[in-house]
Structures are given as C-alpha cells and as structure tokens.
Length: 144
Image (cartoon, one colour):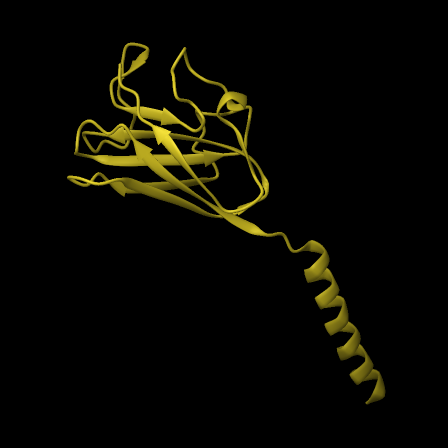
C-alpha cells in the first residue's frame, strides 16, 4: 500500500514538473484589415512560420471573415506559440476560394503583414514579426 501511495505521489510530482518545464505560452494575433474598397466577398488569411514556403503554403492557421457593408474587418489567430510569423491575406470577391490572377498580377485585393508599400512580391523576412505576447496589427489591402 505504501508503494502504491509513493508511486501516485511521484507520478503527480513528475507530471507537475513536466508541465511547468515544457508548457509554452500560447498567444493570439488580432488583424484589422485596412483599405477595403469593395464591400463584398470574404477575407481569407493565413499565418505562417515557414520561411521556405511563404506565401504559397496554406500556413499553420487560416481564418475567414465576411466583408461587412461598413466598419472594420477583424481577424484573429489564436493558440500560437512564441516565434516568428508572417501573414498573407486576400479578398475573395467571387467566392471561389482562390486568389484570382490577371497574368502574373493578382486580380483581387491582397495584403501582407508589415508591408505598407508594394515593390514586388515580399519575402518572409519582409513580412515577419516576432510573437512574444498577444498582439494586434493592421494589414493593408492592395489592388493592381
């Protein structure tokens, strides 16, 4: 009986220690979409921590929001671990869940984190931000 009690206590202590040692804080990023010119469609956004496949990959999390007739559009990515991330988003005007292209240029509004002026397609480093706490940011939409 003493052995069973000791085993239970030891297991509980080890469980608490491992949770303290390996627990990582999870954070959220709230994005306000700026520069919406057409009040229709949906905003699709993804957040990535993969420098190699950004912005082509679907990212590690995606969110979707209807474009309202007025007011700001806000998206929220939750449950993210501390690290370096970048966001890409676009306004799906025709609900085909694809960024439509006109040749090599996007035909629908699009945007990236930390990019306020487009000088060609940005890379991960240009869009990246360090997530160490809950944060909020604006992302501007561009249309060509």
